[in-house]
Length: 371
Image (cartoon, rainbow, N blue to C red; front, side, top):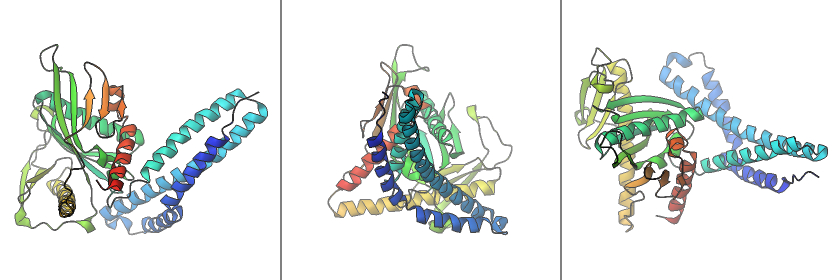
């Protein structure tokens, strides 16, 4: 007789999914989609391309979220039917299919459950990631480029939009720094747990043979703000430098001075942009990122002041948050959550979901405990 009693597991999944559905608030989601659809259908929508882009992007994100919810609901119904048919026909092939689908649904619902923990003020916003090479010379520059590829591959695997805003190439190999945007539902809330210092240990392909090299790279994640949330920056607080866009090895990839570097004099924050074709476009993009960074800095300072007044000034992030070890053994380990993977090549190819989910849960626990 066929052994396929998945009733309890499916019932448990349905309970978890009902809780998630309540948190997501499907009725409100459908109302948002209806409102945004009306705006997207307006004949004068593209008279303001920037506003049009915001409307269509928001509509796409919410439609994707609703499709995900309704898709899970349908898959749970289909799974119950498949299990019933497998029982009646004592069909081992259908039973194997049911077990596979159950495992897939457990992962999908688990991922969605993690997303419900993202309730921060800017968690829904697109994310701007800046990676900077740290100590370690050429290896650090190469490591910074490996991290950049890792995040772009993660976005690609999930079908999320990603665009490189600025890249400063190192002379020998790798990059000094890079800034790129990832536009996805809850991109900032999801990726903000990746912020911190990353450490690589490996046999250096650039140094003397047989010697291990340790190198570091810093990852910064900020939310990309709406214009309505912009910080007012006086013109005399900004120094503007223009230069030619460059490629690997310092070669010029543009014959005009279209790249822009903004320096915020009071804080020393520097933002460079070179992916747009015109100086005006690069300046506008750089200004938006600078305003986002300043708004986040302002909020962090307010939070630090509150902690100081409360007598609690312990930092929530350590200097080093993840180690990528390629020699003498293979291991990637998050030092906050203890989550680890034994195949670094998969991680560098964008397999980050386990680390991100563990990080989001860890952060929520820290918030709930008041740390």
